[in-house]
Length: 129
Image (cartoon, rainbow, N blue to C red):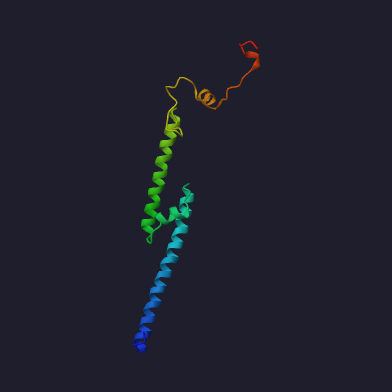
């Protein structure tokens, strides 16, 4: 900048100011689009975090809307599959195993796993010495 004349310095500063203004405008636009996307997702029953929104929101409204529509479709497909699984009678389990074909019911299996053996002196068949 020391070798620049006054017109060159003014031109450089003007370009820097324009660049800064464009960056701020893009930031403001993305924030507004993020708020709108959050509202649309909430209305659709999709709970999104700020991190989720950062993956969905773009600088263009059309692509952001397309991303939200895709996400709503995915949520609906997953919900429908889970509903179908629960209504089939073989709901998914945390361990991934189904209860069908087991000899005992789930409550009995759980009781066997968690029950502690208790010694009862009234049912002791051995004679005391």
